[in-house]
Length: 305
Image 1 (tube, rainbow, N blue to C red):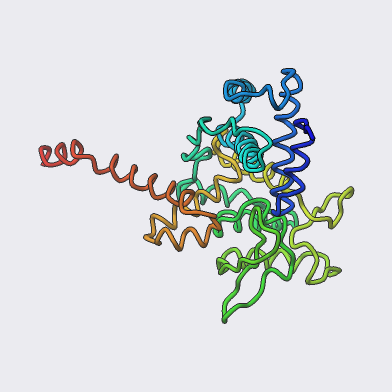
Image 2 (image 1 turned 90 degrees about the horizontal axis):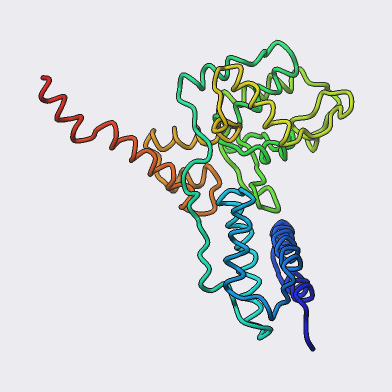
């Protein structure tokens, strides 16, 4: 029986025993590849490694980031490995180079002075201000992602071994299986927010909710968090495309490395899946040390003395 490209993609998706999130990513990536192949009038048997290079160039021309292109090509590469393994055809992606040159920060971290100025932008006399301040502290002091904050429920802030902790559903995870110590300042901000929030909520209620009339008490979105944090950064005079809500997470990790924490402890605290992400911060710290203590600088200091 001869299969078309669309048939094989469907078979591949059906046979993948992975999380729903991964399935969505594979489906999205392969659907984009399929549409391109159809537009190029290419069947499975007609596609070659040269076509894969052409597809890679097509993604680049769309001005996607290195990470996005890598994700798209990664789905296609997994698919063609499966194609060859099941003897439906050859793996035409074997020699395809996937540019993973995104192991540098796409967002900048804040220095101490910027962090202090940023936190001063919140009006904690209003309920909205208290909520937003609590969110900002979780991002900055606990290094959380926007999606992790959005997913939190009231019961995810609790006492654990005589101190306060938070329970998280990490990015790409299907359950709340991470427990982290909660920063004291972040805990105080959350307590202040909940104390003034409406009393009609339960432990299973979303921790951070919308206060707008249209979405009253519904879980806040990651988009809201991103926009809100960006506006506060701008108010603090911290402007530029490299400064976003994710910059607060970078700031937390950078401070942990600077404080002498091991890569393993930082990896665990930040919820990185592998050491590659954590080592970005280590390399940045080493680079700063080299620039701040270069031989030329030391020699100049010796001569001036």
